[in-house]
Amino acid sequence: MPAERDQPQIAADNLDDDDYPAYTMGRAAEMLGTTPGFLRSLDEAKLIEPQRSQGGHRRYSRRQLRIASRVRKLVDQGTGLEAACRIVTLEDQLREAHQLNEKLSPPPEQDYPPLRGV
Image 1: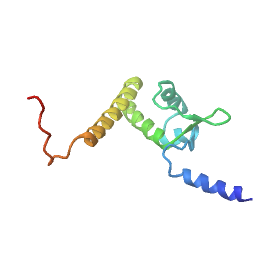
Image 2: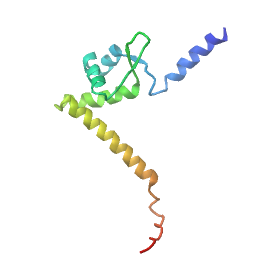
Image 3: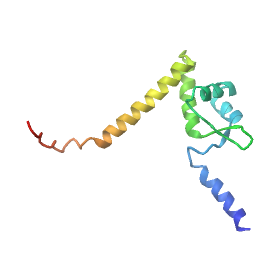
């Protein structure tokens, strides 16, 4: 009997997880205002790879839906699908590089160490 009480708690914990595949293809398409075919094309382009249910149905996370939404906005503005996927990928890589650079850079008030051999 305690296992039944634990299960709802586990499911409730997943509600805050951006990577939890909570949305079916139909629900995801409805939320984005697009078609299931659009979501399949993002899967084919390897931009987002949804998890699969035991029955083989695609399941999307909130993080994946945010990415799909960004691509959809670019496509709606006239950008081709492949180009939109590439733009989103490059934007994410640039953001990650900036974050890494900030993490590895010394604070502005800190003096740089003296150069050796100069």
